[in-house]
Structures are given as structure tokens and as C-alpha cells.
Amino acid sequence: MKTRLSAAVTMMALAVWLGACGADNAVNYQNGEDASANEEDVSRNAETQNEATQNNADALQNDDEIAQTYTLAPSLTIFDSDGAAVSLEDFRGKPTLLNFWASWCPDCAGEMPIFESVYLEKGGDFNFVMLDLINSENNKETREKAESYIAENGFTFPVYFDMSESAVDIYGLTNIPTSVFIDERGRVIRRVDKEISEDTLRRYLNDALSEGAE
Image (cartoon, rainbow, N blue to C red):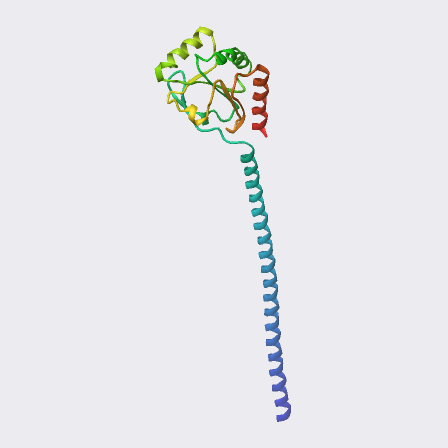
């Protein structure tokens, strides 16, 4: 009797021990599944981060390509016909023709009728910034002289004035007239350091329009 009771106790103890082992194994297996799931999550997160990094790199590369192709027009503060200060950046959003001129300049006078004609046709699509280069030395060029010249010839395009006399240095001008074609993002697309023809004017305006749209 004692032997059977002892055997029964032994069997019960063994069953409890096996059950405990089974429970431990189940927990360990579940932990193994959790570990695998965590590894998969980490792997997916790493892939997502790699994709984001690559996308950022591609974006930076595209910005670099744009910067290498064109440079931003140098910042310049000028004054309109009402005497209000205007920044060149204010013209962004539409292609801009920036023309440097003076009333005493024969070549400037030669291209002014062309600018007037094209302005009347395309002034709604482009900013025309006809910038008079004030030269206070010996009063060679004054605002009054420029305004008188414009009025006498009946030109209607917008005229601005370089009252600080800084444009020559900022844009590295060596002669006038000079025309700078700027796209809607403020990048210099073309530049002509001499009197311009109507064909070239129209073509370069279209270049500024198409390049800015890309």
C-alpha cells in the first residue's frame, strides 16, 4: 500500500514537473515569436529610414543640380517712380527682365523702343524692371534726367532708380545697356551686356519663362 502510494505521489510530482516544464517552454516559444516579430519590425523600420534617407539625398542632389545650373540674381534694393523702396526678390513668381540703362547712353536709346513694344505685348506675363543707373558724379545721370527722357519718348514700361548707386558693383557691370533675364524663382537664366535685338529679347524672355516652369 505504501509502495503504491509512494508511486502515486512520485507520478503526481513528475506530472507537475513536466507541466511546469511545458509551461516554461510555451513562454520561451512565445518570447521567441516576440523576438522574431521585434526583429522584423526593426528591419522594416531600418528599410523605411533608408528609403527616407535616400529620398532626402535625391532631393538634395536635385537642389544641387539646380544650383549648379543657375545662380540666384544678386539681391538689390531699388526705388520705383513713387519713391518707394523695392527689393528684387519682390518680383519672384513671374519671370523678370532687369535692364540697366541711362538717359545719356546711345545704345540704351537704341533698344528702348523694342522694350516698349514687347512690354505692351507681354507686360502681363513678365516683370519689366527698367533700372536707371543714377550717377551723382557731376550729375551725369539724375532721376530728373531719366524721368524727362522717359516722358519725352512716351515710354510706358515701369522705370526704377538705383538711388544707392550700388548696382554697378553688385552686378559687375562693365558697360550699358545690360539685360538680365531672371526666372520666376529668382535665378539668372540669360544675360546680355550690349544692345539687344528684338529677336533675342523675345527668345530670352521665353527661356526665362520655360526654365522657371520646370
